[in-house]
Image (tube, rainbow, N blue to C red; front, side, top):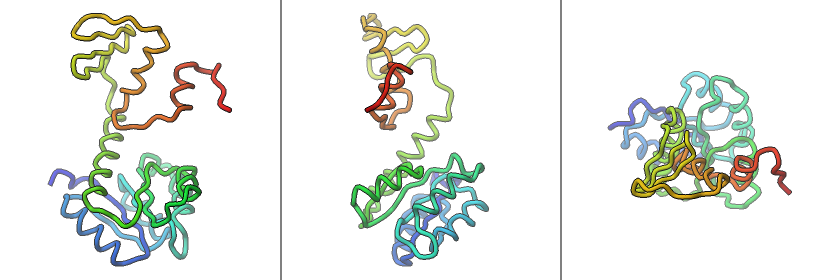
Length: 195
């Protein structure tokens, strides 16, 4: 039970789904809070400040998209992860979720082991990003020195064009998926224009 300090807020208007997720997450050692709609979720989130909110999209009173939009405007919740949970797999609902600040997306029906694995991966990603970056990264026998922009394989230096040395970006937050735009803007800077 190593996750006791981690608070997770579950938001869904279906009691059986809340009960099912609550049981599985408590079994993993998380502190779990429940809400039946987006408005209730905002009130609980302000009070409890969870590290993660798992938010259904289709709910009465206030849907998940609107709730996420409000949560992202609350300064004390700016670092809270938001994962959408929905039976809707259409591309437009996923895009709408990411547009308002979602960090991830889980589809129903929920598979407990997949859900807990994704939660652990999200929390690792955030915890890793808050830690200070080491001057070098070691991956197997490959070492990337961020300060000198050198790459070594088995302690032998490798030759790379300077732009390729931005592979340190890809290793800076292990588990994070960088978009094409993220990579191009980091590598090429202001000279890169999308579209």
